[in-house]
Length: 523
Image (tube, rainbow, N blue to C red; front, side, top):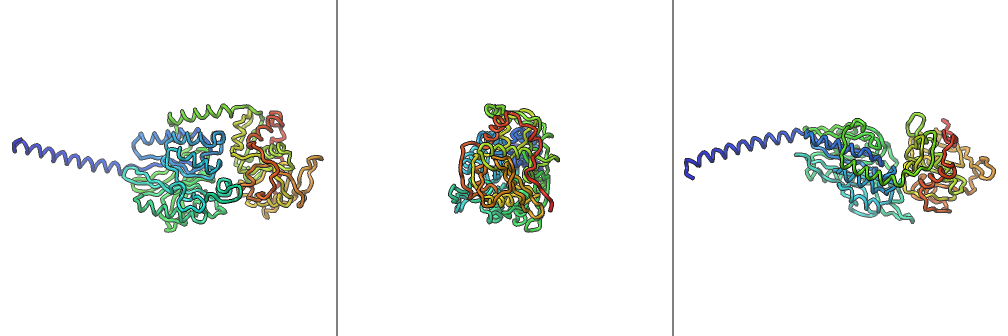
């Protein structure tokens, strides 16, 4: 090529280089203008139909190409309904894998089937599972990574997971062996320090934003660890996506150690809402809730997996066990949940089923274990699983009258606040004094005469309940009770058998309302 020809060629290269440079700057400007949207959920508890809309909304945002988008979970997905109970969590993990999460935090109900089962399932989730405070007892490294980092355009978002230490009581069987030796630890006293260490680590690694996937709740906890106290004891967090208390919180704010206001949000439960965190191009974080009924989108792949799970569930769950002309409910007359701070007809029915099955003086069921209503109409075995989805076995224990009275007082001491230990009883009745939290007028039904008699503190009584009594249930008050009989029968099986056989397949008017076994007086 001669010099005359070379000059225009070089000029063309220079022009092309300038154009390319200009396009790169323009493209970078476009990239920097895109916001980041993190869709989030918590406490889905086997509300499987919502997953396809969650994925569908993510797909719609991605296809619009106006924002980067991801999906996270703040825990309590593995159980709480039929799909989890039947498969010991497998069906739920299969569905979540099809959704394609970006980060998954753990809740207390991930421990329902035992920690070994959790460790078996989580590698199948298809996404980073994170928890800063779950350790083997005496261990120095968390079992799961404390955090994960993802790049959205030019920005790096770090996600940190933290699980409520209340799990060590509520799901104690996952943390201690039968001899009381501790196997795993949620490091109650170290939670704030562990989260702060994770924050410092991801900031040092270049995180532009730090999002905590918390399963702590906003209520003040006996452990001293809740989402608000976490924020007030840390710095460097941008937003907390919370769970555990089933609250629907579009946006709240709490001051951190540096007096900076940090957003907190929670979606409720059963995917009634999809949470939406928006990180704008100028770094402002805002949260809101999208009612699931307002989402017109779905994801075909997730729908197919859900349909497959439903077909598998139907093989067992669709068996008819009876009927009822009215709703068996965990709610009060106002439609709000009552089972954790008051008597309900469904709680009564559960306690009756246990008492009958074991031929015991008293039937006992904690309100936190009764999870779902049974609508009027046909009752299926799936309905029974939905009511009592946890993997607990029916048993009979023996305790003194004094132990029983002390248990009633301990399990009602938080009234009127909700408490999963709130007792539902059969063959017994008592009065709760709301102001003093005393329990009086405790009476036990004489099985021979059918007459209620005052409880005798030194006498021993038999109690039909769940093996949960020995693993943190009822505030550990019955842990020292004598085990008389341990069945291999799950609570849902006992409940279903009672309806099908003892009640002849028909729940009658005696259960239309709660039966007044607990009298609450405001003195």
